Length: 86
Image (cartoon, helix red, strand yellow):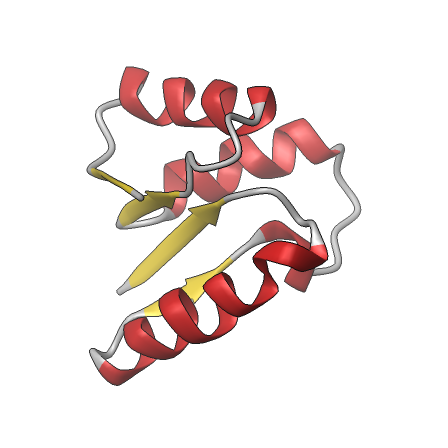
């Protein structure tokens, strides 16, 4: 099972992602990842769409009120993905 994490890539979010989300998910048999962990050839927005579509569910950190996070979350909702909001 895999979860795509939508959150800012800022260093201030690294502990939240690595300890709070990724490690917790791993302990429960879930591969949680975000886009900055991967190398890809396609455009960033296409990659985001593909990752959202292929993930079992989405985890979105809304604490920074980031417009990109809101946009990606809106897309995930529009295609019917289960979304966990933090």
